[in-house]
Image (cartoon, rainbow, N blue to C red):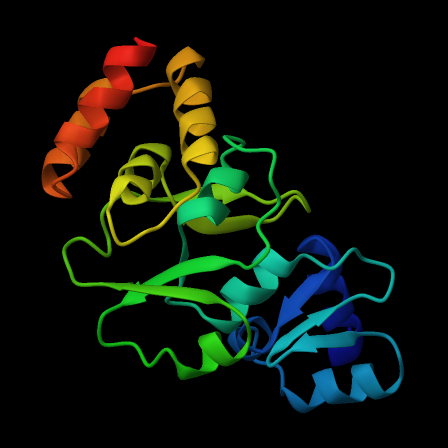
Length: 197
């Protein structure tokens, strides 16, 4: 199979998306991506990320392919976990504290940074509306992050998220309480849970 056909096949098997790193990992020259883009068989959506012309552009996978260390957080994670109906105006991502935030900020990402071990705490895979899997913080971590004073989250959205969480079947109150202690928001969490549980 020719390299170009192999790349198109890779994209079809990956919801219409192929990245430069996927191509390199398959032992194919990245120059083939430019060739396919020039021929109109792929569209470049961001640095190193290409989609088939007929596929729906998934901004979540594009952002994560471009910023591999970024984890979807706050309102964006709430949306991905279906705890809010509000589509985020800007994508929120959390990066390691040593990460240079210039590029993501310049590209409209709302950036947060976190030191280890907190950065890695609660990372999970979640499906985007486009059917792709991306890394986001789990529900419990996200709810605790929203309660932190520096994250000036909309109180109505946070309240709605807690209502959906506490009425759902997959809630994990012990884990939520553990995270609340870790992030020093246990008093705030208690006030929400006393009303809802």
